[in-house]
Image (cartoon, rainbow over all chains, first blue to last red; front, top):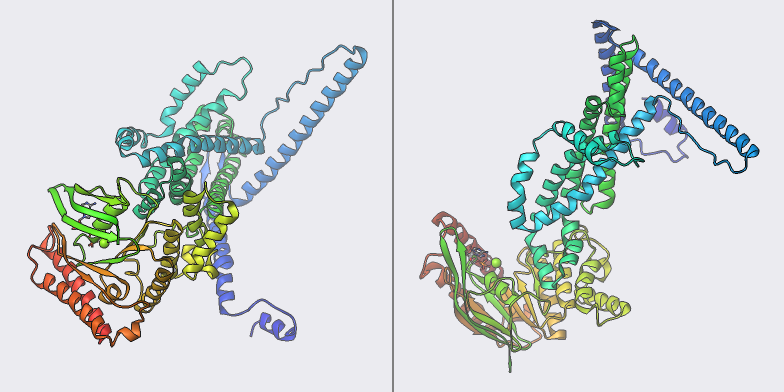
Length: 329
Length: 292
Ligand SMILES: Nc1ncnc2c1ncn2[C@@H]1O[C@H](COP(=O)(O)OP(=O)(O)O)[C@@H](O)[C@H]1O
Ligand SMILES: [Mg+2]
């Protein structure tokens, strides 16, 4: 007899959750097994790490990585503190000058300290989401149009099929050159490097989304299309009432697929082009080559993985919220 | 009685990779206002094709369809269709499915309140008021078909077209649906064309039964006028000699057409056509068993 049952009998007047077999089997399935898996992984990792010697010292084990997480957090706090102090000083100085000379127009110079780990995470997240949303805005209307028109499908399909297998990284040099040629505003709204990463992400997201949307639209149940015809729904209403909802599951499949790939590609692009973001963090640490570098890269690797996972879960949650088809997983 | 719908000498050819395939040859039928006509024939003979031509979803190769003096050239809500597989939009509730149709057909003429009343009235007609806010995946097959019928009725069509509306339902549900349909028909006196492969259903519901020959180049073989008084009750009819005579006539037609097809059943591979025939034979046998 286990403790839980003992407690349950003692407090039989209280309402306890159903402590039957399914409760325990669920607890094992959902909590115990994953925890066991993670523990086993950590053990294996630290055991293996100790046996790998690199030019930068031993390969970091879980403890070293944890230590670096703390260090990165401290660095971030210190940097924010500096930034606050910087703006405070500036404000104070401006206030003094305005007091002396009422016509003086106070100028605020931006803080230009080195980005912290958290800054890089945020940059990467903003980039991937912006590029992704831009791709959504292009791909879904395009996919619907292609899905609705066989002629257009025939016309565009070869182009899609050729560009689809191209790694977006191959585009990167072209994108960089085109952006620097065309984006020459003296007071740019966003940095060129941001634009480069963003366009790379967009290019990467575009094809899976266009294809999935088009396939979803083309594959709508013929009966539903006939219903629309019998009702004489005008074209726009047909799209809004029948086509879009019917293809939502396929559209989401495309979106999840491309967001996952986009996140991977973005990190690589940031490394390759030295654009701000997690990829640059990894690259900088690699170049830096201090004894902590590997542990810091490993920390970044874990964060990249975690964010990728959360992005996918987020899309899934959104899909469950938006789509009528609740069977997705 | 005046002719409402004139299906005038239609031929239907489908282009196929192996050249044109003649599905229908000279199908000619006139239907009066308020008449309930059923189309019966072996599976694959061309019943749905006839219905789709009337619906405007297919364009006849020769001949045409004239509804109250006007030629049918495209689909429209005055020829509402009930499809075999309910074809409800799965993301909308029963109410919203009917609403989509009502808004489209009456959006300009009815106020919001009137539309709501009309939607609820039609769902009530098919006994679906209790579940009108459920989505298709939350209700049974029979209930889905009821909603499909409500949606079609709500368009106030001149002709109601039904393609094996109860074909996918179990026998008990089918009987309920037939009773409901007779009830609705007694109230609304719609003009209906219904496809069925169930002999009892055809005799029970119809004013006329149109029997089609086997394809390719299917056409109307015989037309049976069913002069049974309404309201009809299935239990009383079971012992009615006239009813049984009608049943026998239809069965005989189907069996003769089946055992001595004047042309091969299908243009496709013989293996496939034999499957279809076996199924068709099974359908008919089942109906005979039911009666026994
Ligand atoms: N769109 C189409 N293209 C080519 N052949 C078709 C098409 N629709 C129906 N047919 C053919 O026409 C014949 C009649 O089909 P259908 O009207 O669906 O039969 P039923 O409804 O009586 O079972 C079948 O042989 C079928 O293969
Ligand atoms: Mg059919």
